[in-house]
Length: 580
Image (cartoon, rainbow, N blue to C red; front, top):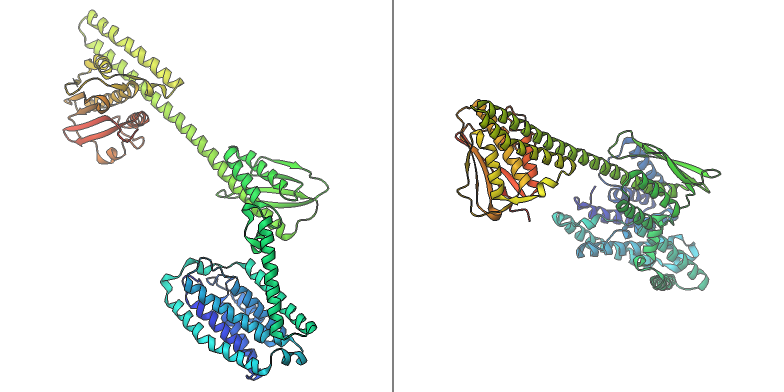
């Protein structure tokens, strides 16, 4: 049962208190008390905050709980009643109220006050001998207490019913319970109760006066401890006695925060997973009674410290997201570890394994990115070589079509130096992959050279819309233009009448390069994935355009398919305005 989704828990708590109070009525026959107490146990089990209410109990667990409740009800006596009411009061007092709404806090504090009055007014006096019981709480006073506590139940039930009706407004803080505070309250109840009885017996004081004196004394003691600890505590340890008790119980006398800070710093400073794990376990030895350690399994074997003449405890720690991968850690301590301390150290080792697994994932990602970068560079250079070979094929075809040796010689003298230059640039890319994308050159100079090298391919060149000169990344423009032209020439083999046009326009940061043809459109499936990755295609529109787009992106430019229809397929290279 979940407090956030079931407002009836407030009503269950009030019902459990009512049944508990009824089992304490002196006017009821003794035969009624045990059934009422058994019914109270059932209501309490439905309300209890320790185990989640959504947990389904099997037949065995249900029989065990039912048998335990029957035994408690069957052997009910003042001592069982005393211990049980103290436990219930402590559990109710352990509820976190700091973030609850005001009406929730008031209802809960009223329930807690009711339980405290029941505990000190009706339950605790039953432990006294007959001679002291009447002097502590007379039958008349007890009768008035029963009437007052009974009269307080209807307002509590009404407030709980209103809480149940405000289901949609319930805050998440309603389900917070601090078991350390419950233990703290249980100890205080026992201390005040027994100290009050001792003061009443030895000091010949009245019962309620003894309880009041004890309560004031304990309050003064707690305030003194609070002030003393507040003055002695470090800035990050302030919070009082309850805070320090919680801190001690959670850490089992081990400064685990410092260890967590150490491995958090190690996670930033150490990139190698094996060295990180070694340093983390070594740091554990500094903050705990671990004298030595060794590890093996799904990690490089290692260890440190003393491994002989000491108690050994082994932990098998599975690695997240890696089935059957386990790190076996052996810890060597001067004495055998207690259950709580061993469990806590295992928790810390599991944290270290989580960090180790994250480091291994980082290493795999780095290796994958490195291989991806190698693949990108190799694929781009492969395409550059392919373009060079295609240029050579075009040069050979053009030379074969020329009628005389003089024209062939002029063509070769004009084209071979450019091919040599481009081959040198490809070698530079192999040595320094980013160098070609950062070098800039005037647009007009690049345009005149590129036009002179490719005018024999039957391509139209147009620079009429160019307004002024601009500095452009020559490697990006050459690579993109080569890819677009070679793809268009491949397309011309299937469509001989294809007209190809290349033009530059704009000026400054708004300069653009466009290559278009009047052939058939690219199919929609291919066009949608054209620049997202390599595309298998017979006409060459595949990895080349993907590499060209990535190259343009790295230099702050964008390669886009501006028009895609039959009669006009246009690619454009423009400056990316999103790039600073």
